[in-house]
Length: 126
Image (tube, rainbow, N blue to C red; front, side, top):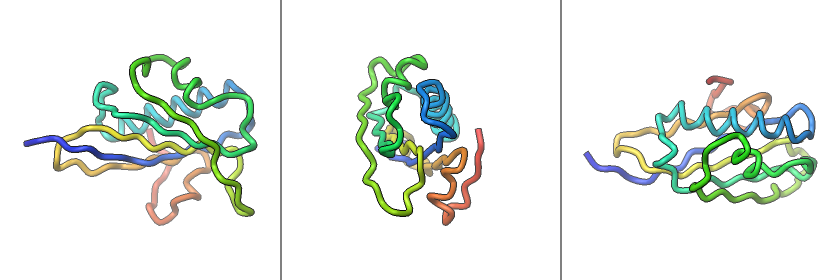
């Protein structure tokens, strides 16, 4: 059985804009996605982050690197466009990785970010 490229989304809402909460939230989110999808770090192609404009105290990529690992993984950050009904203090992520052909990507939305994808019926899980 061969491998192919997959991508999976996720998001976390922070209760406050602090560097510490950014680090905790981003690490929980990325590690949760990797665990939920049985993806070793070596299989990651890249990790893309967006963050809402009200998060100004830390960059999610830097927070993830400070949390350990990911020193050879390409990480990228961008600002999330602002809309009237945007969920505040939210970091979104797109992780692209290699996995077996029969794999089904499983997204993860945490700490209020579940509201972004109610259609998925996702709940906070680890």
